[in-house]
Length: 200
Image (tube, helix red, strand yellow):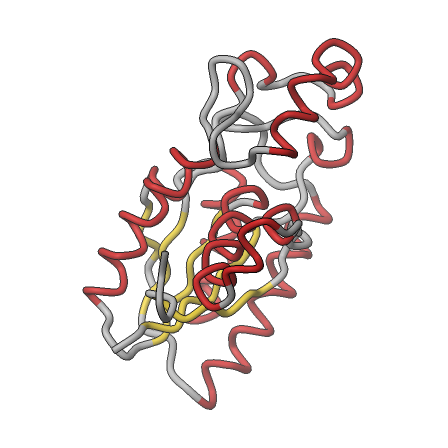
């Protein structure tokens, strides 16, 4: 029996606008980010009307937790924080502008594009490490809510890796495709059944 997980990427922050690497740091939502969260909340309220949402889980980072609180208020549900749902740790790139990172570490960025699971920012996390902790958290959530529908508020990189895994599990051609890097928009709701059928 699977659990329908409604992933939500956190709302926009000032660092998103600046294209600054957030990782495990960064500010809470800006005004546009709060609007992103309210938009996601409205969409989830509509979804809840036809099939009840049982719980809300969220990364403990400020931008995700604030998004989750706005959603929780709309749904009348408490938010459960879990640090395993965090974004990839950006290592020495954390807090730096993407333009600076590209200028100084272009070869590393290119290599991550070629090997998204086995590589990562210097002193940061590999894609595999992110997937392992995300999978641990999602397995526990699914075990608590078999056959139910839950919201998980997380981050662009982490969600894109989970979506890549779910698609790869269904079609191994995706293992070498670009799907892992299709980041969701701020406030976007993405449903994924967990565990994916035939998970690799």
